[in-house]
Every structure is written in structure tokens, then in C-alpha cells.
Amino acid sequence: MNNILEVKNLSKEYNDFALKNVSFELPKGMILGFIGENGAGKTTTIKSILNIVNDYTGEINVFGMNNRKSEKAIKEDIGIVLDDMFFPEILNPTDLNVIMKDIYVNWDSKLYFKYLKEFSLPINNQIKTFSKGMRKKLEIATALSHQPKLLILDEPTSGLDPVARNEVIDIFQDFIQNEECSILLSSHITTDLEHIADYIVFINDGEILLSKTRDELLEKYGIVKCTEIEFKKISDIDLIRYRKSKYEYEVLVENKKEFNKKYSINTIDKITLEDLMVMMIKGVK
Amino acid sequence: MKGLIKKDFLLVKSNIKVLVILFIVCGFMSFNGEMNLSFALPFMSVVIMISTFGYDAYNKWDAYVIAFPDGRKNNIKSKYIATIMLLLMITIGVSIITAIITYIKDNTLDFGAILEMALAMLSTTIIMQSIMYPIIYKFGLEKARIGIFVGVFGLGFLASLISKFVDFNPIIQHLDMLNNYWIFILPIATILLLYISYKISEKVYKNKEF
Image (tube, rainbow over all chains, first blue to last red; front, side, top):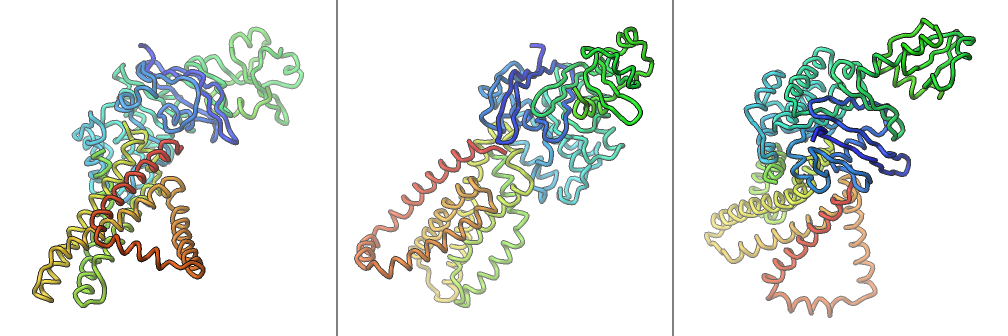
């Protein structure tokens, strides 16, 4: 089993939204960055993996086991951080330890308190007194303390200041040192993913638009800036999306080097994940 | 599941000061004959347990807990078990206080009467919660509160309206016949209702999405 997570043809319909044949894989020892704008289907995909939602079709395998048939065994080895969903805030971190040690077989109280100390979190203060960053750190500490093999993180760095974000990212990188472990990380903060993700899966309007390694995306893809005359010479098969501004055209291309050879246009910018998202969503096909 | 029961008790514990103060106030009022302790405190236990639903809803706990191993199944079971445990504790507490008050005031101890009171108190509260929980799980706490309020007053209004046209006396006479057996009928009916309530809540929760 090389893949820790396999999502095959996942579909789910709501009245005003549908996930359409979402498929991707997460190999062992890797971090998968799951990106897309609000309402694109990231959280629905995560909830389907965790069986929080019903009536989805397709197949989801975690640790080589079907997520419906082996739900309990799978969940023992998954650590979760869900966006804005957590323990009642009148409890404190010590209370959480009391609760969680009876929920996860592998709950490690020592490890939990070690994380709390590392994150400088007070152990006897109610969660409601914590800042957003402190809450996120507590959620992450809780997710890590039963020694999971897969971390599923929905917006884990949102609301954190740059220093706290760096601390959290370091923890994720430490976690991934064990090559049996993987992370599925859904985030709007694409700069974080540029640093740590091995794979990028881009979802838009319930469909996967791109699924590639980070290096392939950031090294091969580019944004060509050209005049209208130059733009008209570009063949349809060589452009993925384009945007027209007042003075120039911006064209998203898949292979910078080949494009350069073919069209001799030198102004090709390196792409960031944010550029990619904007071009894929706002650009013309 | 033990962890989830602990979670509810930790939530209750955070309100323990209020609970103790109410116990003392109600105890004094009961001592002066201004109120019946056996009716005030079970209602408090309902309020306390319902408040745990409030905390859960506010922090979207349900979506989080069902991502735990067996979370969906255990969340319902733990809520019912925590409710019964809390009720039992309050019932025992109230029974002891009532016994003490009665002994101080009248210098007598009627264990039969205390037991009957405890049974009536326990059953009434369990019946109330058995009706409320599936409604809360189905519609959420906010809608359920309004629904329960409208339901109780609606039924009261309906009953008073019907009583103007229908003579209930023969029915009441028949029910009077059961007076001697209520000590057996009430617990059985309560347990049955609790079981039905649990099964409905479980089914509602199984199909619920968060």
C-alpha cells in the first residue's frame, strides 16, 4: 500500500452545489495541499472522507481500507483539525485530556502536554479565553496526540500570525519525518502550501481542475505577458487560461520552456499558487 | 463513549456553583414550606442538560465528534447516559435533603413516601427529556425550544378546548383505577418511552449531516 488515501470518483449532490467525480491520491510520507476558493468543495470532500456527510457516491480508501466498512479503525489513526469546529469553549485543555484519553486508544497524555508546553498554552484556562491562534494550536495539539498516521487539516493556519504559522508548519514538517505518515491540508493560504506541500490538488465548483506535484506546477507552469498581436499568434492548445488587462494579455501556460522556444516571447513570469488559482478561476478558457 | 460522558459532566461541572446555590435556595424554601423541592430540582436538571446541547451547538461540536472513532453512535448514547446519571444523582440528593427536612420539621421519616416522590420525580423528568431530545436532534436546539414551547401551550390549549365539549370524568374515573398500580406502571412506561426516544434520536442522528 503506497497510498495512505485514495479518493475515487467522489460525487455528492446538494440543492445548489455538487461534487463531481473528485479523484486524487495521497502517497505515504507526503503532504497534499488541497486548494480552491470558498465553496469549491474542499470541506465537503474532507467531510466525505471522514464520513461526516451521507449519500455520497464513489470510493474512499484510507490506509488501504474502505472508509465506510472500516470507519472505526480508520478514525483511530486520523488526526483532525476542522474549520471552526471543536470542543465547547467553557472547557480547558486539561479537561480535553480527560475526555480524549477515553476516546482514542492511542491517546498519549504526555505527548499532549508536551505540545501544550511547546505552544505555550495555559492548561487550566477556559478555551474561550484563548486567542484564535491559541485555539488553532490547541486543535493541532489535540489532533497530534493520539499518534495519527494521517492528519486531515481544514484551514489549520487561518487566523494565525506569521510567527505562529511558521511554528505550526514546522510541526507538520516534523510529523512528516515519519515516512508512514501523511497530511491532507486544505488551505486558502497558498504561500504555506508552496513551502510544504508535495502535491497540489486544485478544486473548483466541485471539480478537480488540477492535480500535480508542487514542483511540476511551480517550475513548469508560467504566466506569459504579451501584447494583443503576440497573443493572437498563440495556438489554443498552448494556453490554459488568459486574462486581458488594459495594456497586455496574461496567459497561463503549462510548459514555460517549450512555450518560449515555440513563440519566442520572453516575458514569462514564475507562477505562484495564488496566481494559478486566480487564473484558473477568473481567466478565460 | 466514556470520554463523551465525561465531557457532558465537565460542562455540567462548570455550572456547579449555580446548581449548589439553587440546591441551597430550594432547600430553604422547601423548609419554609414555600416550594416542593422534589419538583423544582428535576426541572433544573433538564435546564442543565439542555444547556450542554447549547454549548455543543455553539462550538459545532457535533461535526467534530462524529469524526472520532464511533463518534456518531457514541454521541447519542453518551448524552442519554449522562442525563440519567445526572438525574439519579439529583434524585438521590433531593431525597436525602427531603428526608432531613421532614425529620427536622416533623421528627418522622417516611421512606415509602420519599421513594414514591423520588420515582415520580425521576419518571417525570425522564419523560420530559425523552420527548425533548429527538426534537433537539432533529431540529437543533433553537428551533426545538420554540417547538417545545409551542407544543406544550398548543396541547394545553387544545385540551382545554376539547374539555368544553367532551366529558372527561368517565376517563378520569378509569384512570383512578390505576392509582394502586402506578408505582409499577410508571417505571415501565418511562423505560419504554426512554428506549423509543433513544432509538428515534439515533435514527435522526444517523441521517443528519453537519
